[in-house]
Length: 287
Image (tube, rainbow, N blue to C red; front, side, top):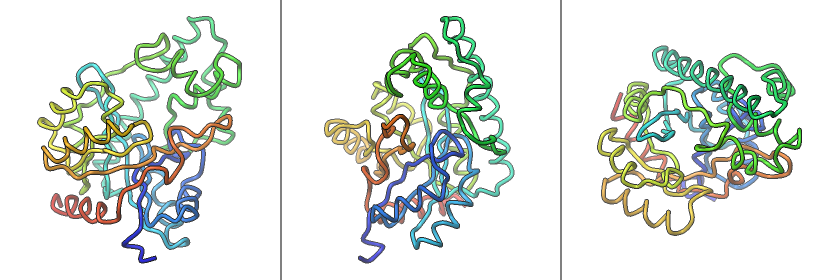
């Protein structure tokens, strides 16, 4: 198969944030699934990109340097994906560091809320659940806390932990001040990358998504995602066309916890290779 005719999963997470596997394992799995390319898009960090890139050379697969930035708009947490970012841009790394500090503050507040609910959970248990020391520039997220809740019997699985305690509107949810989607798009562009609105269907507010597009001027929108059904795919493909945005997609793979793959299995949602060429062209035009 000509690599440039292959498929690409543009949304995966590793141990550098809240995924279960080392970055190299994501790349190896992408190769096993017959993909031509994979993007590593960890939350508020690019700490795993160098390892993923090295694995890409080993397995003969394209690895895209990515990131997923946490933002806030319209009273909701909104995620913005960045592709082809310069992972050595000092200003960009400094900005991501600030986001991770806000994330850590939020994490401690979540633990406090869970304890107030009578749940026996501590921050040390969350760290111990990693099974390894937390490396510099890695970030911890809600899936790590969900993992402990399941192990201690407070939830049946990851999704149940979110539905009971950790999802927006649930008793353990905490929101801290975050940057706007517009900020994130500008940061990504300043770091030489292309900006994409992640999983718009999860926000349940298409009017807000349109407003974000108008204000933030992203390069693309994630039409294909593990939590999007056919109707969402149709709707966001139309939105992409209306706003002249690149149509992207990916599994949002986090690995397997308690036998359940969260959100979707690597390679289960993909886009053609020419999407990479469009993203790269958009990224280069910002440099």
